[in-house]
Image 1: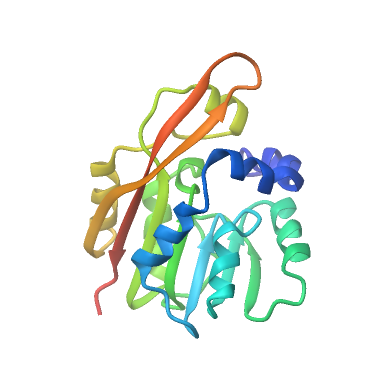
Image 2: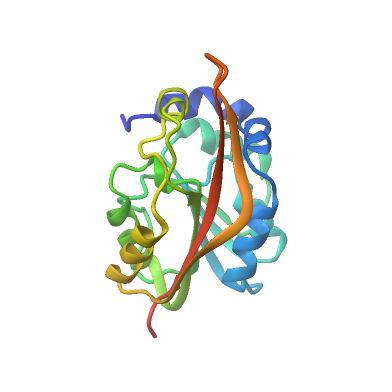
Length: 210
């Protein structure tokens, strides 16, 4: 079993409420704006959870492949988007995506990277499934020191240095790499004490060469 998967299965039914406390819908609006999504194209939502990113992609007329390692999260998505056209749900890890090479025009990974075991490998996988000219957008946490996020939310990594993420994008072969501030904060309170996390959110983007 993927470490942390049991946690996400347990909280799947509460995830939409929890997510709303962590960060606002402005994060996904910024991500979709930077990607320049167009109707009729195909997007992959990696670490899709209960469909925070997928929801708006479908609304904008894209076809979506939503990937998550948690059966509980995928079950929530199946109920939420029952009957939705253009959506495929696939169980899998970010480091080994169940998507063929060069299959999608956009890849989004929102708050996924800090949960994976090998972030650089996950980024290479996301680039692999992009078509030439496709765009990858990752939104995630800046580096922080809140240890309770590891213990209570199964975070593998305490956020990331923006320069490090930019390096991973370039090493994976992406061009036009940018890492910028989203203008939002991720907020979480420890359930076991008085500690409260308030962490910056970055947006990293890059384009696969044509």
